Image (cartoon, rainbow, N blue to C red; front, side, top):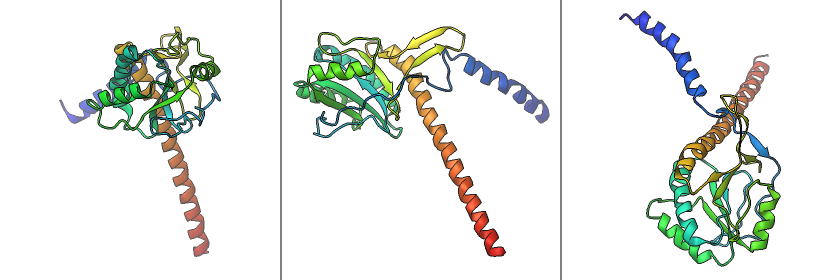
Length: 235
């Protein structure tokens, strides 16, 4: 087969392959829908294990409310660490924020020690502590469909973007079916690996593309200024 035929086959096949890739996505694979905007940040009075404040602003955050049933949440947080944190922590500004009842500090330290055996850098994990009533009040501000249980927790986790918008799945998917997904179940390693993994990837790609576009504008502006300066010198 000569070179020209190979090139023609590639040119013909490539659009089909690209179409099949996007058609296989079960929701909009270019943009992760916004479910709610202008959500409240984590109160600065709530402190981490290091005695610092946490923030969602300018971060891509996996937000969770694990609750006080430590025996139950150990496995859930392990799933989250393996399927999401380990995969995406290398991306700038990606973090985990878990809102915990006061009194669970030692339990959280123990959980982190267990995770250290499988993850070298846990600096993106943030546990913040407050009263059960404050957890409920903060949770209510998001107007989630789900509810906290009697242990002031839920196995669900949520994606919050840098602008404090809650992201998820909303509207018609690629095959025209209506869907709504506000959270991801940490009990299910498969759901974290597949659905949440895809959605986090889409959001990270959004920011990467926006950054490239911004850099391009800066380059164009710099080139324009340089051109004007050089033109003025020549004149």
